[in-house]
Length: 203
Ligand SMILES: [Zn+2]
Ligand SMILES: [Zn+2]
Image 1 (tube, protein in one colour):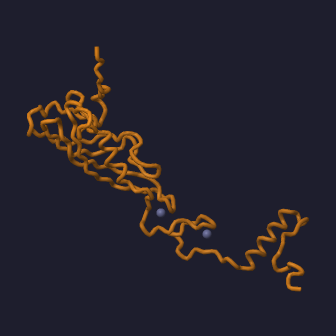
Image 2 (tube, rainbow, N blue to C red; image 1 turned 90 degrees about the vertical axis):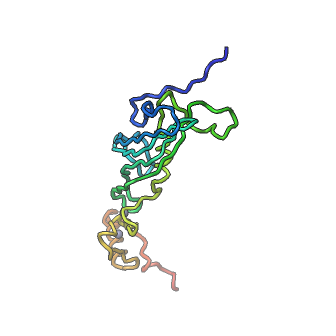
Image 3 (cartoon, rainbow, N blue to C red; image 1 turned 180 degrees about the vertical axis):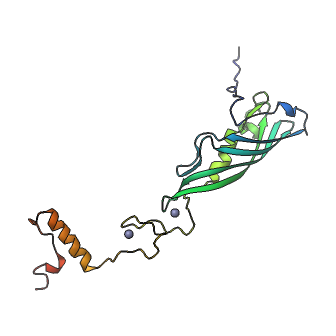
């Protein structure tokens, strides 16, 4: 006896599992599906993602074809993350096109259609299709504003709020103050090296 390999049964209650039952099997028939569903988990990259359970708007066309069901349309949602320069929250509207052919039967090995997903009866799982279309469309380096100047590397101040922000690199008062602070911390027992007082350098 040859064991029959069956795909894992799809759960019709999953938000991105669609039922093509109404469509029927006669090639040429078409069904429009418009619905808002909660987004699956981990729909994004490490820095920006459509958060789980946030709304995904599906505008789809299901078409019966000889081999199965052709799904095409758009998926829209809102991704949230952090500006890579200043760490402020970033919100980005996402709208991607999706298109996939779901087959009634697994094609013979070596055929071009081999990689295509299968229908489970009348059910089809759109989640991998949405994931493949949406995740690569997200920015890898989201910014709150294309001109975001980021944070000061010395003190972490937001440069957007303070365009004139800067530190005097060679202000002698700064090093004097530093020396003073260090002396205080050391109870005056150790004096940090002061470049102005380095001996035997100019002799
Ligand atoms: Zn920013
Ligand atoms: Zn600073």
